[in-house]
Amino acid sequence: MDEIEVIIPNLSYRYSGGTAVNRTIAPLIAKKRDAVWFGPDAPEGIARLSILSLLALRFRAPRRHKVRIWHARRNIEMMVGLLLKWLGWRFALIFNSAGQRRHTAFTRFLIARMDEIIATSEISASFLEREATVIHHGIDLETYKPPQDRAAAFAATGLPGKYGIGVFGRVRQQKGIDLFVAAMLRLLPRYPDFTAVIVGLITPDNATFVNRLKSEITAAGLSDRIRFLGELPIEEVPLWYRRISIYVFASRVEGFGLTMLEAMAAGNAVVASRAGAAELVIEDGATGVLAATGDVEELAAAIEPLMRAPEKIDAIGEKARARVMDAFNRDREVEEIIGVYEKIWRDS
Image (spheres, rainbow, N blue to C red):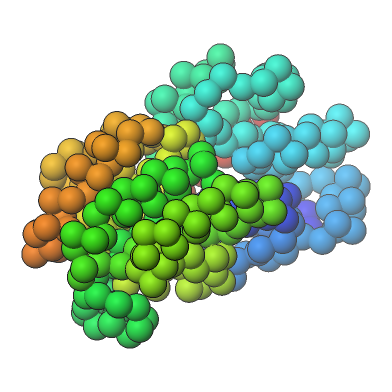
């Protein structure tokens, strides 16, 4: 246990974008440093730290450095790390911030007490009110990759039509699921070769929102062509990127927008609202298409040319994957994160 250098806490029992990022990055960090995972949803390739072992670290000094890294991505993880540090654990605290809004007073209180801050974009950094290191997200290019035959992959789903168009993420208004559905209600009757899929968790507090959307879909006679697939096992999500041809990132508010990068890596043509890091990631008209945030008319207008000329999708998808490979690959992100760890160890 005295060999442990980095602890990656994941203290949310609801699978989220933060969990997805942690699961992607943690095994690579563990290949280069003695890192452990604390919490649910541990990926392969990294050891798990139990609660008893975490408590025992209070009495086990780190061998290589004066402190261990506690790398948080949520308020609860900052809170736990700060409490442990106050109680005598030899921790240096890092917060990875993706938010693009003014933080609450309590979050600002926690952020002010972190040893280092990482922001996922320059926009996120601008809301922190303290110095931060900007490190863009990276994607696992092997997990998220184009299929050998996208048409065959879609046909194997048994869904009607020839092409899929989708949106992934928790099914709620913030993610713009209603905007996506509204755009599909307008476009699908004109383009019978397409079927829309919505992949993501539907929570009880969003049941009214989802039931309203389903009623609109039924009233339009499109229940067979707009499908809610629900929350899928983690390993199945990359398969759906390979099955669809167009990915719609319709968020009204977003920290970064990891699904956008995943879709681009899988060779989808991405239509994105100007939320999160969309304008940083996508070159409009080349590696994807941008639309105004919260605007159904503009979203539908951005999607329609791709549905009208699906033969253009592959070329955009190829450019999108090349963009991710060049600027948003996972290995680059890991090296930059470890650089922040090294800075803490040098200065401690």
